[in-house]
Image 1 (cartoon, one colour):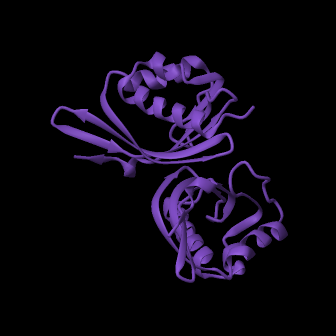
Image 2 (cartoon, rainbow over the protein chains, first blue to last red; image 1 turned 30 degrees about the horizontal axis):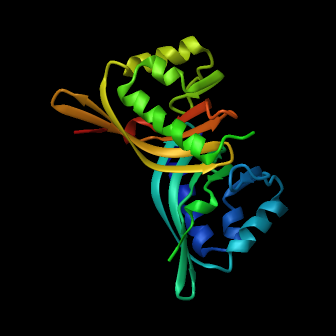
Image 3 (cartoon, chains in turn yellow, blue; image 1 turned 120 degrees about the vertical axis):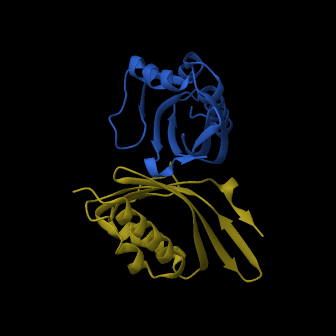
Length: 124
Length: 124
């Protein structure tokens, strides 16, 4: 049975919390086995747990806050814009990508593709 | 050669203008041969010119205005949120989907997938 819109909304919310404030394990717990991430879109997809772990390990130690801007759910997929602010001492860097995810029957993430480019980064 | 970010931005801008104010031919001129649309995501994709024409013919006679909210370009793809307002006499209906498009080397649309559901429609 396909995941409900509510299942998808919960996973997206948990994902943003985990990326900003949680551990790599918190993030990985939201993914299905055999998941794929492509961040940003156009780069080589990561298809193994080790390579996905490596990707999120980079952001784990950063002081970050995340906020969901817009979420659109359709079928067993979602597209959402969010703002991710990284606090670096007195400076902060903001990126607000649009992510597209597909989900399995339990609402776990099968694929994550992030749409953004360098020019979308804002340093304050 | 891959389309530039500028090529992609131009096509997205023309697409919104054509959907809101143009003819079906204006819309179809932005698509590559062999294009596919899936609107909303989760419904059967339309893969023939005739079926794509049929889809846009429904909105052609409507009085509409469109506005780009957020555009994220990555590789030869783009994700963007836009607001589409349909004016129906004294009432108006607003929908702001997130669309994901892929583009060919000339910046023409190869695929369009629209993320939205009934609950995202706002009637005023």
